[in-house]
Length: 457
Ligand code: ATP
Ligand code: MG
Image (tube, rainbow, N blue to C red):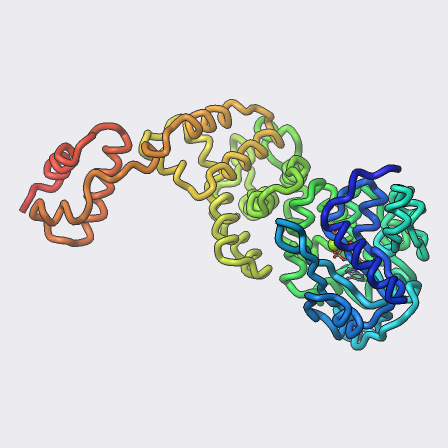
């Protein structure tokens, strides 16, 4: 397979490999970039593996950072003409010692053997090296690959297979279980059966992974495309009940068929996830996953139909607990919760007073609210009537009408003879509402309205 012209990052990494080799060391591209080149995908970054020690790497290049020198990792900066600089990770071949904490090797040993280096990596498709000099000559990554783990075959067969004995490899580092699911979903691959069985057996031990790393893996699954497949696999492997038990509770919770012909709350949620595009905002993706997380707890069979009274408020509380547990930043939590809290308000939009609608539009990142509502419709009844109505209004209302310069301020009220106090909030809101409704247009009109309701002292 021919690949498109290499970008600056590939050039910089190939240059580093060439310099290392000229100095008598072994050096290759390694890991994700090799996999992506073989798949004909643009790699996000290029990692280099070498027999040179970190000290040797540090002295060979002008600008370097010894970020993880004890792990053998050095960052090498390459200038890009007119475009700043590029950073390439250069890692010394190594073998990892025992993992007593289930997260990190106790010690690493540098090595001169590429074979030792790839054996400590996670999956066969991530365990290949590539010689950029051959690639530059033939433009065929498959000619340039050094495959010591059977990665080519698994890439062709669409399999995520642990390198070595899967149970041992997952016991060493539990995060690999989540990575396996993520790669399977991203590339629409299967988990190789022994790899899948090992994950099923060890799934409870995923609790040893830090909450931050679990969160980051889940966020990547939600925002790389094929999120529904990732969550189906998380469920099938038994990882989901460990990391997000609240989400598993959505399984088998029936919904009223007239609004939700697609099925239960879990099926509905997966249908939303299926439509999340690669690169979508993380708050939108998390809200898509959690927007109905309050339904299991509020399910009831009313005389007329199944109802979930209060599911939004309950859902916000559950989601807040999830965000706290997974250590989201405050601004991320806020946006996720706002999306969940407001997701049922679209139904009221056609009846909203003009001032209420404009305040609705003031929600931070309203485009994300719109996007969530659209997903919610498409994943259930399929009608976009309401969505089109709200989007139309949102897109055509000029910003100065949504957030107009206020006609009256607290200072104006004081000048008009009112004593500052709690009623100021109501007075100002009344004036603003009238302004948003288009009922008043000048400061005098707004003050006159206030005097009607609150006779001046
Ligand atoms: P992505 O496209 O998601 O970045 P990647 O394969 O490049 O995928 P990275 O997390 O960037 O993944 O890691 C680079 C390489 O390091 C992997 O390809 C793999 O060889 C190795 N690796 C990363 N994490 C682990 C781990 N937890 N256990 C073993 N090897 C790992
Ligand atoms: Mg990578």
